[in-house]
Length: 177
Image 1: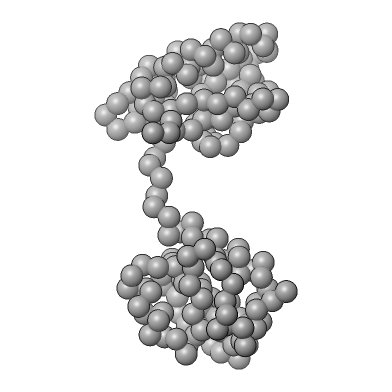
Image 2 (image 1 turned 30 degrees about the vertical axis):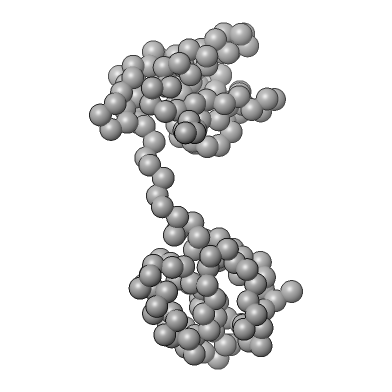
């Protein structure tokens, strides 16, 4: 399915991204740009595209495929979202710092934490965490679980939690609330 020039008046719901027919709705485009609202410009096949300098704007030629509209709208929504706070940094001395706050992390736990910090919010396979913590050989399962438990207590003051994703691995995220 695709959207055509005739269907622009009844646009699909794109979750906060406004469809603007270019150049017919230039006023609307300018109004949305002034309000820092994401917008997707719809161009007829023969229409020259406008210069786009704003990260909250993109354009597509009609007829446009629904998937293309959704992907472009998703990208614009991500650009419009407020930036997430930076993740704490683990230095070479095993100090995990976030702003003026810090905690000391022992060497094995620092090696366990490193792949989780590189991919916050994503599941890191258990095997990868083990290989990071013990590059010379894998410990038994209980030793890893004990180290994860201790690490959880150390990073809690920084508002971080490590979740176990059963059968897959571990996930580092900010504590809610």
